[in-house]
View 1 (cartoon, rainbow, N blue to C red):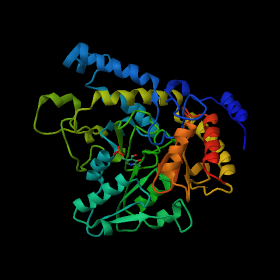
View 2: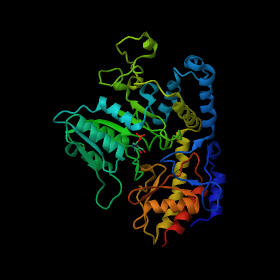
View 3: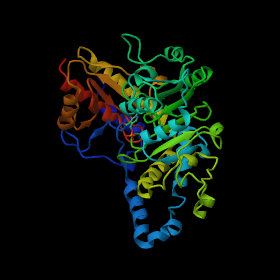
View 4: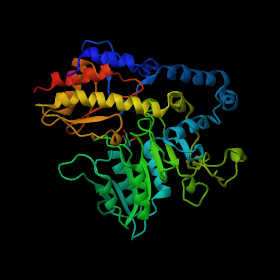
Length: 418
Ligand SMILES: Cc1ncc(COP(=O)(O)O)c(C=O)c1O
């Protein structure tokens, strides 16, 4: 395995933006800070978040209700400050994008519009390894419309002996009874980056609506949801978007669906801003994704999202992706040495074009949760485990280092006997 000096040299030659983040202290091992690999679960806090959140809080103290219009960052249009940066991150137009609610709530609000089942076309396609919340959401939608989830939900499984889905196999499953395809852009468990463009086209050719859960894709890989013709998408902001636990999510609705007749659930923030305070009983939704908003936005939850998106705007997702490819390849190379003779197996696709920043390791006979605890307390390495046997490591290009990768690989080699 490459030694520590190599890792430190690589860091000197290819630094990220770790200085913009608070890196937690280690609770074990030889280094003061953790080697943080859980940014695919909860990203680290940008240093600016505290300052800017306090500024927004203080506007409330000094202005009371007048802060809606008079705060330096006025609350009435506050959500609009997030729209442009969020749209840029996923390749959408600002009019197609809105930051609001939590991810699963957004998936439901979007399915109200986009899951319109009929007897002959009511099935929903998801991955068998979809995040449970997505499974629950689609099952409950099917039930809500009077269908049996056991029949209505098609769960895509990799071929026997394989860990990731093949695009051609996904496409083959998209028959004439499919109403909705709802897949993860990057799978939470395997880290597989799906071919969003091809699958979206195939879904449309089959007559289905195609939506994407981009929780593990947004801020991780460059996306072009508009150009790819995606019908709708939603993503959270607490993973690669570093906006804090339970941070607000976002939603995308393709331009061709805006201003049309799609059913939506409405509230006072679904109506156009210009006439909102005329207090009429009829909603006048704008021809933008804002029409999917329901309630007035929580400013102190929007604040960390705004701060974080500014970092992405400054650094640029294309630049981040380049560093991500280098970091992940480095970790992959180190892990290739570690897995030899150990009950470990990387299940993430080895083709860099089919993955983001995450490498998932199946840990066989070792207990994944126990291993993650040992890595944390004995080595100061923060990885996460997913039941029953997967350890996930995400070298995040904004703040992870080559030295972190070296620490993770070395710790794994020590913690799992060969
Ligand atoms: C792919 C995916 N979908 C949905 C969720 C649930 O998100 P929320 O609790 O914000 O609704 C998560 C959470 O980690 C996730 O990873």
